[in-house]
Length: 114
Length: 115
Image: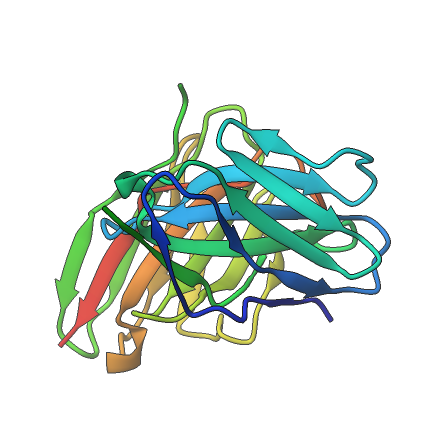
């Protein structure tokens, strides 16, 4: 079975500072994908970044980067230069080659302080 | 940019009533999904659909739920007899390909409130 764990229910960061949101995963499938989604208070799910299990480089998308440590089974999201608009829930998710559903973590609520 | 759309954005219904939540996936996508998020909780997988049939479903997706692709564009989730605990945000998603590593594009969600 697949499992995603996000141990930080809430995080605070000062505007313009960097913040790391933790995510660990568990799967026996050697081929998988890891995703981060942002959910603002309006409720929609916004795709941020993707990392494949065989990708050698850490994924980056603008101010978002994914710190992928395969041996530790962690896929932490790093947001650089936080902005007030980054305040939202952040979900880590994964899919595996042998299935087609997303497995989500419980989310981290990020608050950016001016 | 193509996007998944969902209607209505908010549905209020009485317990025991049937509801149909509608989704229009991205036009060239072949794989469709429904997820549920109870307020304050994580997103949970309900069902995936491909080639006009269910390919995978969770234990949440019991006999009161059904999915259908009635035409070439819509993908619907029907809840036959709603219960209070069905109150949640329901997300539709679609993807171009199946299996691991393929991004699923999520719709904006339908907030279902059962009274």
